[in-house]
Image (tube, rainbow over all chains, first blue to last red; front, side, top):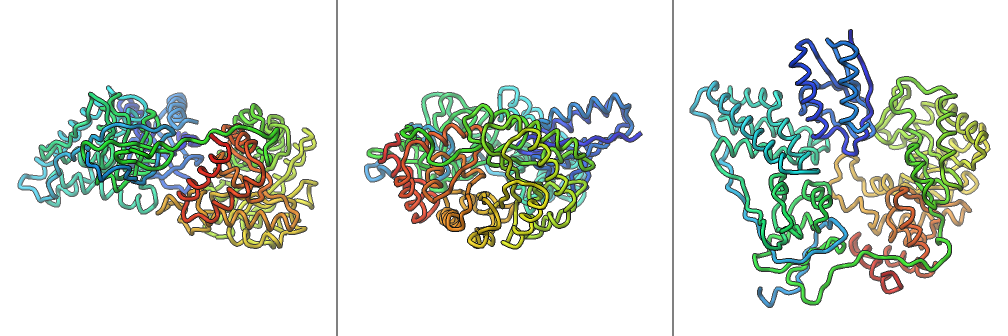
Length: 93
Length: 540
């Protein structure tokens, strides 16, 4: 089941180093306990990045006020909900 | 201290509102990195060395972060994750396969990653990456980048630029900072602002400062004074209200329910800019008419007493809507958006009209980014066909700013958006402002243009207001009143300060301040001359 959520980035600096690193850390540790997990973020132009790479997340160039689409595969809905909730808190929503 | 070097003024960009004085501590640069080179080792060996180095740097960054707080912690903590990012390692690994040493490969991988992004105008996001790259290279080359930061005594630090490793070792011994590079958004500025350390950044001439000089760091004056004798710190202006009402109405900018609540706690005379994008941003489909009515009704109910000026949906902010057509590249994208999404705008107007009826508030509407009087006429007719609102246009493009006289009888008001207008006036690329000073609202050419818009609006019997960040600067608000602008709209947090400054001077003084600003040579000269003039006339 593919799980999709939209998150608006409220952080003034957009998806910058700090939240990108927090998200990457979160996804990496989630993958350690669930090897099937794949998390992909896309910007409004449709460019995609692996959630486990802070670098690729930053390269999406997401600005404050933009939305990002989070796609999660290989997780239960509960797991996905929890991941998205944490990501929202990192992005200051 | 040599006698001939007294009261030498070095200009830069000021950070903070307080000044600091102490002897200069000129920080020597650390050892330099060896140039890129090919390796004598096997790719497997170089990869192992790189893995060790990145893990080592990660550990030392984490350790530094442990002793840091606030923004310094944030940066160090983020870099500790980024240094072990697989994308960087894989890219470096390819360079290692080509025969490069681990240090060279990592340096190239980071540059490769940053370069295209810098071209896209995101340079400031990656400023710390260069430093990260040099940490790994230094670790592999066995050189030390550590620089001495004094922890005893009282010093003004003079340095090329601050890295997070430098700021992590800041103590109370640092009472001022002068950097040769950097800018208003660089790490040095963020840290100094957060810690309340007076700083002047991007001060290239600081290279002339020598150990033993006494420095006055004067951020309000955007300068460093070397060996001050006569010169003193510039004061922030304190305005003393003499009038019972501000010279011109002060309204608040609102973009969300939260803003509306904040504005309701101020003495703002209504809302001069209500942004309407928020409701639409996350929506996959257009919100229903009912949902829009409910939203506007709630916001209207919270807005401070007075008119509410609503800006119809704006496409100019790089936020394409999922259910609308936007042509962001077009110069007249405001008009294009109206034409391409007519039904959407009509439903927004219907919702606003219904919410107005339910709350009884005075609502006005204006459209963003229109480029000509005929485009404005199109919008005005659209609004008048469906509502009884007073209609306006934002002045954000020079083409329209130059034709305000032709708007007589077409609209009831205009509102100048200073940020977009200065971008258009100085032809600044939206994503990569090459010269940050051109975006300063104290640019005399921008002030002159606002003055012409205000005069033309007066002749055409149209109200003229200014929203945008310029209106939140209390000193600049006096200039705007002097130019003939009829009202300003600022962030809720600035309402009280802007009102006070507009209650401190009569119209004649404001007019003279505006004349001084228009006839200044530069943004810095305009700001300083107006500050000096208002100080003579009663501000403290």
